[in-house]
Length: 356
Image (cartoon, rainbow, N blue to C red; front, side, top):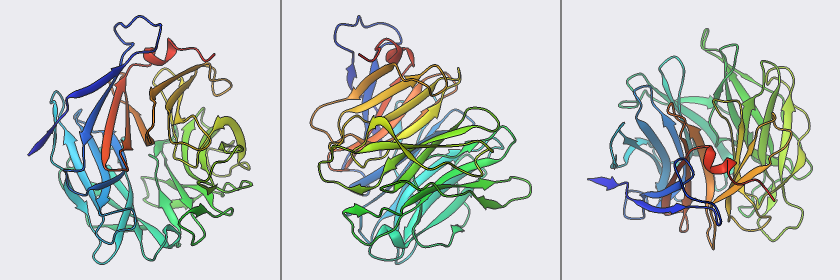
């Protein structure tokens, strides 16, 4: 059984003439009828052969003991995703956030969270590796044994050949509030020899988590993080930013940016032309709209912004990649986390919308 990738809607900014490269195509990938009624959050990568591969964790609910990590594939040139199949399931434990990533050396990494107690602050990070294009997976390995360690955003390959995996340490035992001492950090992986090295931790006033990172040059890195705190209406909720000047080994204190954040995930991407793209919810208390902002001056300003989804929502947990053909793909969830959506567009679709 496969899922049809029929386009649901193409969003065109009001007052802008539609044309090649200007449309944003949004389609449903999977709905509640597919395995794991609860689907959250989803991750995507382009494999070495051009296929797109998607992973999510699903089950009866966020804290369900039946949650598993599922994977599905959209073959290059195809219009239908394969039916989701279980790719990680720890007996008697709950799975959480998956991250799937095609490494430059041909290996495909799957990182994911396993929860050992009642809240995410009891989690650890596990991983699997595939050497056949995500067709089969290795046994799982433990990446971090410290309770509270989690993943959400994709790794990047650094200019020196190392990999940098964004992770975070979540504290507290209140399911409705992220502890103020929650911190973002990174694991640095050296392919030869294999091994992980932990960076310093990013502290901020109300805590921060789920960092998304880019490398501006071989020493200067920037990350944007989801804010900590609760989910109530907040007039002072902003995305948190930090930077590193030693290749990601140590990080500055996290500071609020101009971008609002309703305690929801963000993603950050360096495009092939060097432009930077931030995907986030442009609101302090609602997970809508889902907005894309582009910087053409190395993170100094973001004059180009466009909503790729708007309305009641929520449209949350974006995960963005750029494929070899230059297209940008954003995966996100909606409809009480039972539906995975896929937005595809060219950067031009954002550049036609200067921020007013």
